[in-house]
Length: 115
Length: 115
Image (spheres, one colour):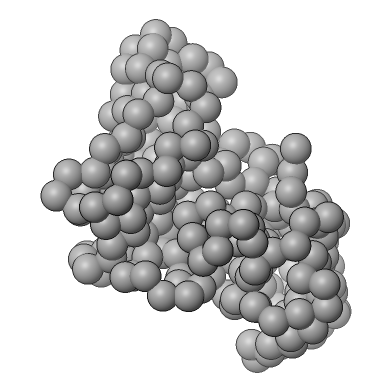
């Protein structure tokens, strides 16, 4: 497809389990972002990848969260030992090669529910 | 703490009415963006404003960036049912330059337009 693709669209897991969320950005986009959106809250920045530079991980809420981006394309966000407060929509976005005020193109998100 | 405060949080109006939503901060932003998000989808960029005092129009939508680049407003003329959605503002923090990965989002204004 032409847009940012995220999978799964919904994930229900038990507290303590690990989960992996996948993001396939738009082809040719060099930047990739992960945000989290909880009910009634704005988008919370998690992590940002730009080309081959070291990722900006400053938004990750704890060491249970990690993300990688393989080959400058697909990214996986991993949450270990999930907690109920991790329940949220996880949004991925990508943007074209560096330019001032480039657009962020968002996927439809993964709705994570931790029981 | 929220860097960007949006108001009102909820707005419910009849088709044909005009409305204004606000995005305020005590911080100065290098640029500010407005997104619209519909249920089950990621946010979609509407506009980016970069210059203090800038006004941009997109059909019935008028966006204004404050002179001090700390606030913005979105005005919709003659609202339609298709305008229903969550309107989010997002600011690029000035000390990050043009690194849009560090976009700070407000909590959004949920707009419902009734026929």
